[in-house]
Amino acid sequence: MDLNYYNTFITVSSDCPVEIGTVPPDKKSGRTKPSLEYELAANQPYRYTQEELLYEVHIRHKGLAAEEPEARGGEHWDEFFSKPMACLRASMLPKKYGWGIHFNEAGKLALVPKESAEYHQFAEGGRDNVKVLKGMRSSKK
Image (cartoon, rainbow, N blue to C red; front, side):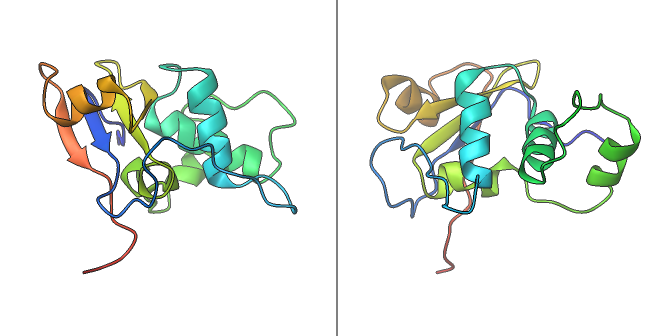
């Protein structure tokens, strides 16, 4: 089963409270999932697919990253993806922190700040063959 997006742009949620891409904070008690997602995606654009990022965030958040992350299809990978989970449209990055997410033809992702010209070009459909999806809202209306 492939949970990745290809040639897709996820816009910032319509009820996102910020006007510019903002770095998610950590808590005093440790790292948050949004800060891990941001760190991995921002520091290494187009390195991770959605599946790889979700898995990497999971093992780091749970403190399981002592050894090299397991490759796709391993026991821990299969166990992690055996449960239903939210995609990056539901991530706090587009919902709360002002980051669009671009997935290239290989399914690799990069963050695009809401205030950038690149963001507006993607969001307005100005890139050929890129499907535009809205980030999920935080509240129901």
